Length: 119
Image 1 (cartoon, one colour):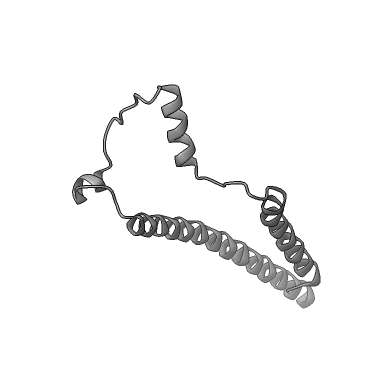
Image 2 (cartoon, one colour):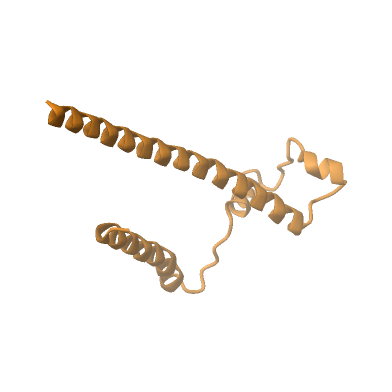
């Protein structure tokens, strides 16, 4: 890795660490809840607690009740893995495409140089 790239990576890692650490230090004792909890609380406030869901999730129908938290975590991890695989698949394709384009340009330059030197 070039020095310039190393410096950029280090700076980005420091920025990421600051983004993670600053809220934890500044907001001591704050409760970081999920958006699902906040959404359901807001809906119950707006409807005065009279909200009934339109449907039940398919997996809950199949299992005959609510999912255990371990199963929810597993499904979330699988979803995350699939999304990550898709993102990095395309990043890899873009990287290889750029690499092949550079190789083609270098090959074209070599051919031009060899043609120019043979004249």
